Image (tube, rainbow, N blue to C red; front, top):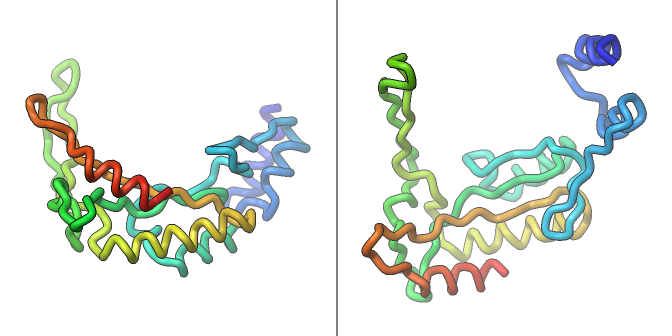
Length: 172
């Protein structure tokens, strides 16, 4: 087994074979498929939410490249009027702060804090992107899943159920 892995590592270190799930299945007898919400996921290689999952062209490129799934850029939940409790997260420019901090056993570590990283365009634009993703999913080309940041209440603060209900219903 180790010899096979080393051979494949050298052989595929720059690029995987086009149908690498078949290669893994035939060579190692491992089935990489899974199911998510009833949809087939052909293998575990996909893309998480971020700057590279916010337009139809990126989704088409991902499908053509053979990715199994994409999680869309995170949309910020809103109510029927467009009000969003987490609106501060919907800024165009994401800001990241990296700071040193003490880690376990007195070692020095790092922490990363993000300010804003959600969808900063109209919710209707996000819904249009979700529809493009659904078409790709239904065609069996790419599983596309939306991502939502809902209101996260503090301990004594009530949950904003209207945002949850409205956003979830629109995405369904």
